[in-house]
Amino acid sequence: MDPVFTEDQIKQLNEEVLHSKTLEGEDFMPGLVGMNNLKQTDYVNVVLQIICAVKPLRDYFLVYKDDSELRFDLNGIMTQHLSELVKKVWNPRNFKGHVNPHEVMQAITGASHKMFKIGFQKDPTILTSWLFNSMNSYISTKKKSSIITDLFRGYIEVSAEALVPSEANMIKPSKTKKPFWMLPIDLPNVPLYKGETGVLVTIPQVALDAVMAKYNGKTFTDDTRAGTRSAFRVLKLPQYLILAFKRFVKNEFFIEKNNTLVTFQLNDIDLSSCKICVNVVDVVNKEVGKSYKYSVIAQVVHDGKPESGTYKAQILQKVSGKWFEIQDLSVVPIEDQTVALSESYMLLLEMQ
Image (cartoon, rainbow, N blue to C red):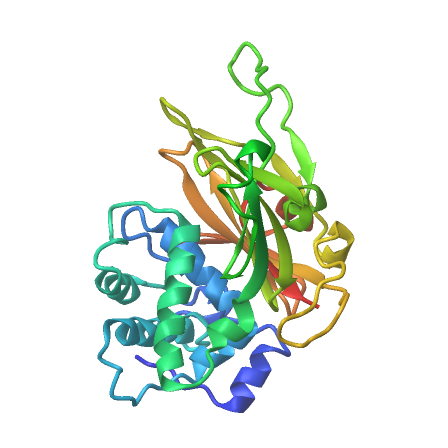
């Protein structure tokens, strides 16, 4: 079944909370439905839930129709199946209160040449970057612009110089402009002291603006292998900004999870106060010193140990202002405080 949406129906999704019933009489809300875990595909489910939560991208897929000669391209097939899934998630006439992402998963497996497949858990940040690259590549072949670029692409400037002053003659300073789909965020090292049970006595915390200081153009990161140190400066922030927190650290023996809690407010997050947008020229709009305020609309949370944990999504229902947690087939309401106190793995911000 391929639902068809009119402009009035899409407008209705933005103005009121819809309540529907399955064939068995169970209640569900379009846009907040669970997805089958096909065996270690929870990392796929959370990325799909994030995509469904971005209104302009959702609206694009609700009316998506591909009649081009390239529609049988692997990326074209994947994009088509993704649009069909978004339509099912938001369909008020669903037979069930959940959807099966099997067709999308098969298309992703094919287009990625089995990089992502059933039975093998992967990092959702890697899947997100790959999906954006693949969809952007396909959509931009049909049109001059791509909605993926319009919504998610930002730019940073990377300034590199020699790590050791004595090697400055061999490594010349350089500045490079690079695009990004998401900003990787380093977390402070986990304190070494733990209690008798081996668990941290207190969970370390750090403010969002503190970890964002990496992108102020003045904080340097050392790369001992390359013999350089680099500073990062934001040139353009996108309408939808994804922050990817580096929680897994691989050492010589095992992978350790960093449980540091990143504290943030849900609304009026002014990234210019982090000094990452001061004296910045927007490379698209040519605006200087623009104030960037964002709101949190979704996040991915990792629970458990690195090798055996699971992913879940927390989604804001914008019409009601209420938050919901979706873990595979489970959909439950949660308080705002739960969102702010969760160990965020991916944070999705919307420009106000």
